[in-house]
Amino acid sequence: MEGRPELTDTSWVLTDRDNGVWVEELLLSADDIGAEGASVRKRVLRGGLSDGVEVIDVDNGQFSFTVLPTRGMGIWRGRYRSHDVGWQSPVTGPVHPGFVNTQDRGGLGWLTGFDELIVRCGLDSNGAPATDVVPNNMGIPSEVGLTLHGRIANLPAHRVEVRVSSGDPPTITILGVVDEAALFYPGFRLGTAISTVCGSHAIAIKDSVTNLQATAAEFELLYHCNFGPPFLRQGSRLELPARLVAPRDARAVEGIDTYDEYQGPTAGFVEQAYWYEPLALTDGTTLALLRNANADRGVVVRYNTQQLPCFTQWKNTAAVSDGYVTGLEPGTDYPNAKGFERAQGRLMQLAPGATHHVDLTLEVHDSAAGVRAVQQEIAAIQGTTRIDVQSQPLARLSG
Image (cartoon, rainbow, N blue to C red):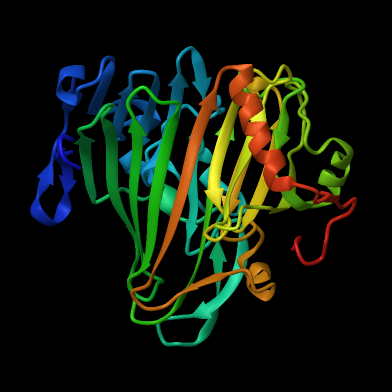
């Protein structure tokens, strides 16, 4: 448009394995970015289970968060103004994948590195540990063990870039590429662009999952978005537009009457999970809100049901020292055993070279007006549709 300055990008490549580039430290100031209070810092952690973990600290002037290239480009912790965004895991992290034995405890070892705000689960598999049958290197169907939530969160990015786009205000973007592939294994490439507008209350994630192989492949992807205080407290509630909610198992049945409510930290609490069939606008856009009892603080996960048609609520309101947290988890399927999800027809397929795109946004609201506006969005999508709350697990949803 005439008279409007042309927007430009400035970029810094931090890792490029193919071209032998690796930058140990980078510091971009507010002057470099062009926004008051903004900064980007890349560093490498030393000591303990974090030894060797690369982190990129991003601050847009209001919202700060940390990206973990060493851990599948997950987002560790954040802080919006005076509010922590994330949770306090029993794990002292971030944990280097070299210290994570995913086979531990019958395939639950993924949990020994789990303390992120947002962590991807997949790509070949997600969900509970299980046995699947796949062709081996000689093409013979063979049993293989699938561990909790797959491999992608414990794989490092082989290309990482920081990009600052000029504008009023500027945008900071962290780009990464992670491969989950091996000979005689499925082969996938995750490309991600994690961006934030300076001064904003949001982080936007644009992901792509590409099938690197010459044959079609099933894939699974779930975004484990995890929150503790101050958004999770006694009396907090989960609100989202849905046509159906069902308990995962007998333990979840015990809490079905208060499935959308949260209690305070409770020693000995055993996790509960609920499956949702979400509602959305005609273009697939929808959202989920976790808000406190006073409805003056909340976090929102925005996603698209055409990309991520399933939604899981994970409640783990244990003692703070044991991991007081809830998970808001949009996914391509439910985190059951892969064979069960296949039998239900929920596994997505990627043709050779094909790509599946995902758009997900995390927002933080620290006012009653902000929370109320989100509630109005949810109500508009829900409309006159009644949420069908099932009192028992459904055979088509719980494996």
